[in-house]
Image (cartoon, rainbow, N blue to C red; front, side):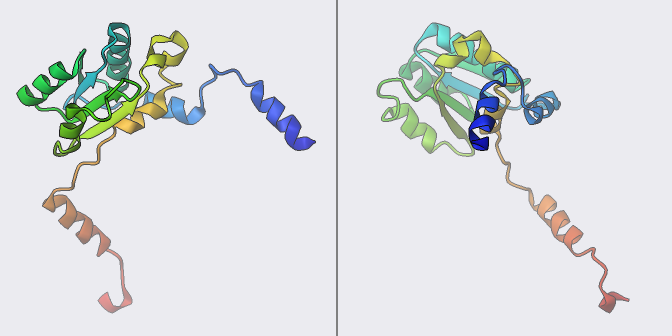
Length: 163
């Protein structure tokens, strides 16, 4: 019976209430000015909303939306990108030539989402969608200097043999 009450209490929490971790994470200053995001979405309204939401999540990033696979392939050939966003509900998207090329694109990530919710005002709350930003994080490989420094730092411990 106690479990049932707890579940009912959880249901009474307003959806707009932000998770404390999301608030803290969303408030951190991040610079994505070196990021280039190409978004493919045929629906103009969804595309515009998705570009706006992703631009807000990735502060400073260059985010461009295209309407067709042909446009996406052209942009892929003309410019360098590090992030690609597609709506996985678009018919034929998963088997497209664009997806095949992007999967082999060096040092890039592909984020497949349902972009429809971005058109709803309640789904555009920065704190509510903060976990989404984590999909766009790229781990950069460490340079040799950084690896050497990390190795040296690990050897800084005091051993009795050193004394």
